[in-house]
Length: 252
Image (tube, rainbow, N blue to C red; front, side, top):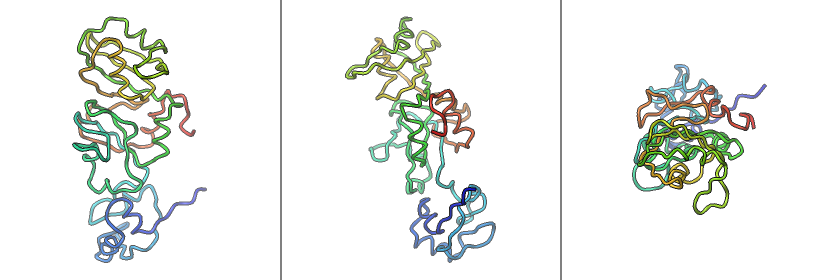
């Protein structure tokens, strides 16, 4: 049976972005940290880090943030960048301010460019991040593309051929599936994550993507009631959906 991990209280809260260890010591002495309703006055004590800790611990009367291993699904708005450092609006600006100080840091699982909206995952679990983006897994990504010009009818075979080459690259694209919605709208399923791949594919076919929205990752669908800029925490069953129909198994 696996042993329950434990941590010093001040170290745990500091890693979650609540403040420095000395600040956590002062907060504890002031009675601002409780566990199961009892005050934890000594920030140096070790406590079991159990999955239910956020339901049992309060910081200044508010529930503890999710502990390490969190996975977020964000409906990324247009105009935001998937970066920690670039100028302008960043997807991390949507999250609680103290979450920017968490260690391990929260990072996006892959990227959506500034002018692409839709399903974006963020996590502090490095192992999960690498499992999702691994080329060996072939996790499906489904995008809705709005095009500047009508489709010609040849794009589906071209994208599915496994022989399509993008400018500046020496390896053909893996087969991709095109589902036509209308003359100027289509769903494209890809299993790779090359730079601006969907836009470049349509450009190579003689068209231009005017709007791009990611709707699905593996078997995980962007909820219809999650507005742009909103996010939700994912549970284990939802995380498992990411790998639905992918090549690798969840335990690899």
